[in-house]
Length: 233
Image (cartoon, rainbow, N blue to C red; front, side, top):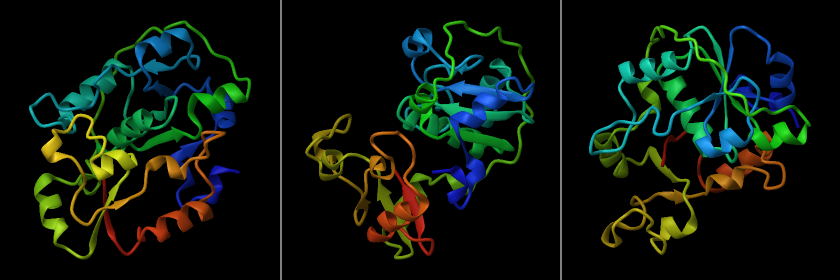
């Protein structure tokens, strides 16, 4: 399977492509795993994303300010004209990093399809060496606010038939049987939300996204279609 089967293949990259371009001057690889996993082995030249990066520091969890994003990216040596490739072990952490770069207007940011698992499966090299960081001044682009659903928007969307909320969590979190960090009296899901755990779109053996046609069938079966405004959580 190749990334070209998708509507926007430019948002993904393969381990093979990344291996061929590791020496590119304007390529920055971001490792969104934890510090221990990074120290054990990582893609050569990869930059460790600090824990809690791109998250707000207030009482309500959310995205950081544009200024904080620029400061974090610049501290990693990333400039606005760099090609950024995000990866992790399973997907969510790299997905959040990709989303943050995209939200703040980064021109070219990609998700490594299959993550570190595909990198290792291709027998590509790893290292324990931490690259020297060269500070950069990150010039912010235009933020894409369409990628963010605020609390007021979510409240209004519950009663809006054109909006569909997609709960990507586990079945236990959706049903409330496994509330995790939520208080017991706040367990469950948004009214009217459909449940489809994000892992259903990934091949369990390879870690790669399923083919585009298979993903489309899965989404359509849940009513997640292009005609809907979708809010995922």
